[in-house]
Image 1: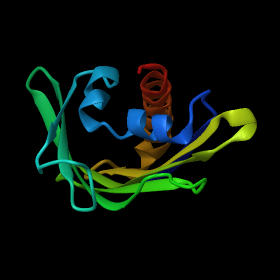
Image 2: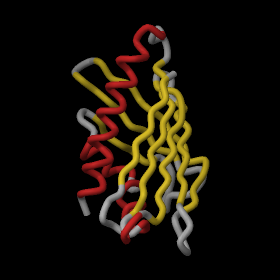
Image 3: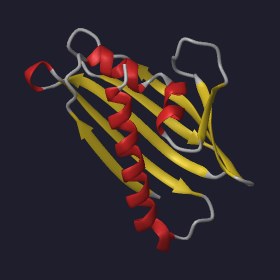
Image 4: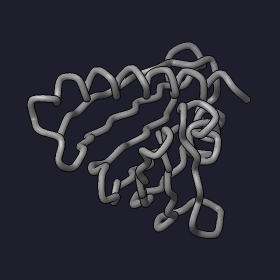
Length: 146
């Protein structure tokens, strides 16, 4: 398992940054070769489940996730969403925290522990660098797109 975290301070109010980061189908627009299917009825809440299917030709896998903490930002308090990864291949968790930041901006923290079943630990440095780069680009794009 690898751990990484990202922090951003977008020029958005916390509620808007939260909305942009937690509309799950939009993640497919910014993560290459991935399709998102929400498998529970909305709105998002604890218990919401979705699948990120990544495919490149015949190679494909599902990253199944469930929202286990859902606390949107409110009254100046930061929001927190925790996702548990429950797939056969991808394991771990992700946390998205959004609250007030400096000068009217939001402060976004994305923390993730990620593992790939059957991938030897010798590949952890490569997995960490790849995941950090991919999620960094994805978070930036999600925050830029209304």
